[in-house]
Image (tube, rainbow, N blue to C red):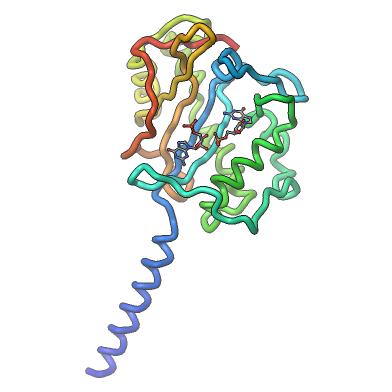
Length: 226
Ligand code: 5GP
Ligand code: 5GP
């Protein structure tokens, strides 16, 4: 009997520790892709990377750990600075799929370093630096938003499309509803800027989003060329 009680107490302690460890975590990731045309034709404008104009395609902005209540952790580990050498095997894919459009022209390192420091360090206990970037690159391969949209007759040609038609196309092709973030061009037109999908906290599977970030789009939004 006493033996059983001590086993029970041990189990409770282990369970308590497990809850503690898990509660340091986060609930899910936002995987965010940007449309370069909408970054560039806005007031802030853009600078092409040193390697040249990126492809006319959605590119990665970030993979962001988030809590179910809508808040999110950031800058979790100052002792884990971005280290380019840890992703040297991914360099080509990073340049292609995660270019930086900010000015002045760059080779992406400042952008990647910012994303790692602010967001990546908060999921470090599941994905180390190499795997964090590799996971984002692999997620990008899983959903080809440009293909999905063009298949639905939604093309980056400066025309306006209903927000619903964009969401429906993505939901139809992936099974999950995206969150669309808009920005405005220099003439104040609402336009398709970023697409958010939710991903489970291992970075493996796309999921439905239970909470959505704020931000507004008009009901008809521009899809600028790039
Ligand atoms: P903004 O001010 O453009 O909404 O967001 C600025 C930055 O804050 C984003 O690029 C991103 O790094 C972070 N951010 C904004 N909203 C969210 C969110 O809902 N979750 C997470 N994890 N980060 C966010
Ligand atoms: P956030 O905190 O919004 O995740 O990160 C955005 C930061 O990365 C800003 O400081 C922005 O200037 C910089 N940045 C560099 N390149 C890009 C880019 O191509 N797109 C966006 N949205 N931000 C970029």
